[in-house]
Image (cartoon, rainbow, N blue to C red):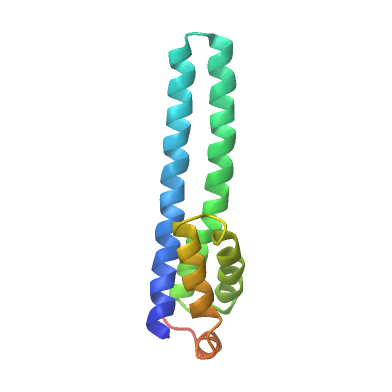
Length: 122
């Protein structure tokens, strides 16, 4: 199970980074659409909405990255946070659902919990 926890940590980091990239791409897209509209007020509104949505996505992806790093280091807090995030991932069909199911399988396995109680690994 130790290998599964490490893999899950890598998956969490990758998912978090992908969400950051999506947030950045969405912001660039919305600013571009606003600029292409030719209307200054529409550009500000569309850019503002793009910034707000991108910020929410980015802020929500940061805990996923931090938790992924914590899982790779077997930090006790990371197991709890990863379980909470796994529940939210279940609603993001199809890839998030797969990640959530895998996370729940790994983290709720009876052989996994002792890994987080042992001395910290590097």
